[in-house]
Length: 576
Image 1 (tube, rainbow, N blue to C red):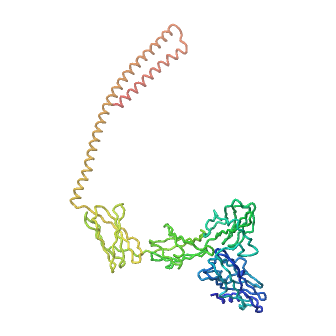
Image 2: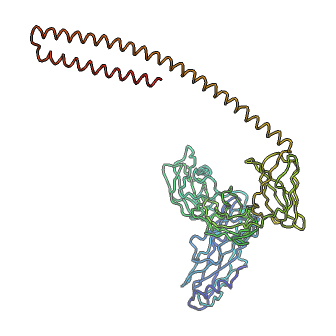
Image 3: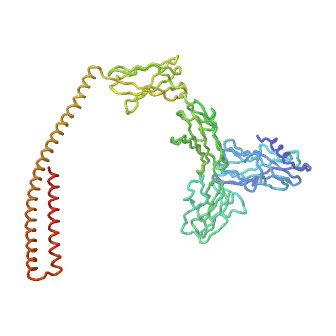
């Protein structure tokens, strides 16, 4: 039911100037015609008030839903500049609703278009359109309803299509029986007519029959328009760039020698804008002990609508949720461990655009359990018994870790007093164990772990003594063998060194003897040369050079003998 008082209030709010009250009408155009099943009918709703300015109008159109189906409702060319209620329709109820406003100075005249209703014929018969309610408010500052007449329309619907125009006698050409059939339009960029796309550039293709002479195309908001832009020779594809957001229709028609054929229509839905911004609200607050906090969020998209949500908590895998899952605006998160977590929610519309909201929450840890009794030492094979206190009727998780091995978890239940006990199913083997515990209450909230306690599992005394003796023997025997080997190595080394030293002394003596013999021969030869020069001096005077040679030979011979004696003494001293 149209809420007339809302329009009255808005008209008062806009402060419009009052005029005299005159009559206004709501009508349909066309108001009659014959159509076949499968045909489309575009019906305009007109407002006429030739003597009185109006600023608001509303109406509910009724139609037989068993014979007609609304495909879309268009606001293109409407006199309304504001909408109290967006035009809507219900094929199940057989109604179309509109409610709009014209800003000051309002509208006055004949056939002011309110909306266009695009029907599709479902079944044969007579279809009657009428207004079940309506109003036209005067631009008088009081919201006076000046509506006097509500029109109606009647259409004859048949099973067989007629060759005559179905929408406008002046715009639809005659279709001959031999003219081309409607081309089958497809789009490689926007293949599905029921889907939404964010791509603004589109390409359309179709096949041409052999006798095609021309093509006529049109793009617009009407689902059943007749193309007007002609191409000759015929073309079989068309690219159109920079579509605006909304629902569009591409129309194509072919011509042969018999004339223009049937028109094909292709629906195109474009949405390039992301959903509206939204926020995440934590129902239990940003800090809570509840391990499954409840969050609230809701995104809207005025064009294609919300398709799904993507939720990511911390580093976990993203979750995909349908709008129905959060239609009540509340969603319970999966169980979370204590600590701070980030949450990211992305709302995707049906064209793939998305809007992002982020938040942060903290799961508070409950108090850890208290271990009241445990053994610090156990003998190998003894059972481990642990007792403690925690929340009533809660879980206590006992963790055991031997050395650097993998920890094992054991779960036990506390009683109504919060007491719990744990007895290990298997006897613990020798070694050092670390033990700690955690609590999980009835609501699933977790605690932080307790401090790690140490439990030492020992062998029986007799086995420990035997083991110690074996350990000592294991150490002593290799050590003794090592010492013996070391002594043998040292003895062998000393013996080899002694033999080498003796051999070296022998070699040095032999070298010394050979050196002395060689030097004696050299010395003898030099002295004979000196004697020969001295004999020559008795016969003649020696030259200055010869005198120098005699002196130099004597000095060199003495120096060499001194050096050799000294080096031999040093060698003998080193090898002693």
